[in-house]
Image 1 (cartoon, rainbow, N blue to C red):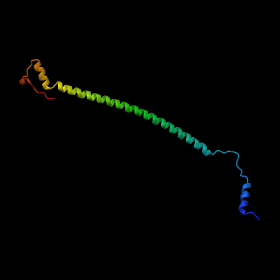
Image 2 (cartoon, rainbow, N blue to C red; image 1 turned 45 degrees about the vertical axis):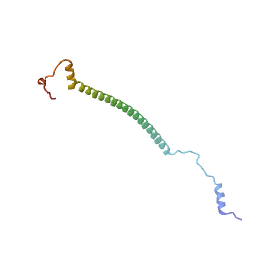
Image 3 (tube, rainbow, N blue to C red; image 1 turned 180 degrees about the vertical axis):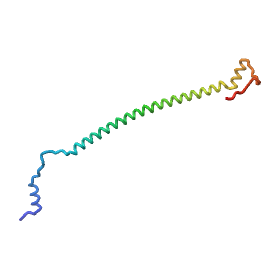
Length: 116
């Protein structure tokens, strides 16, 4: 009994030797792709270093700015306190009290108003 044609094809295909080339040829695209990959990786590392350096500088600038704002706030408070003290020291009631202690009297005829 003859064998089926499908079996004959399988045995025929199995007996064939597939020839592979023994020389390994590298694709010209592989070198280009490798160079592009290395260049991209290098560029990413450089950008990462730039970002980290910029972040450090920004943090230092923010700290300096905050210190300046704090110093300004202290100066404004000191100026306001000084203005309040000047106002209290120059008040009419205080001056009248000091004049009475010194034995001075106020003569309304000798007073003049000076406008700024």
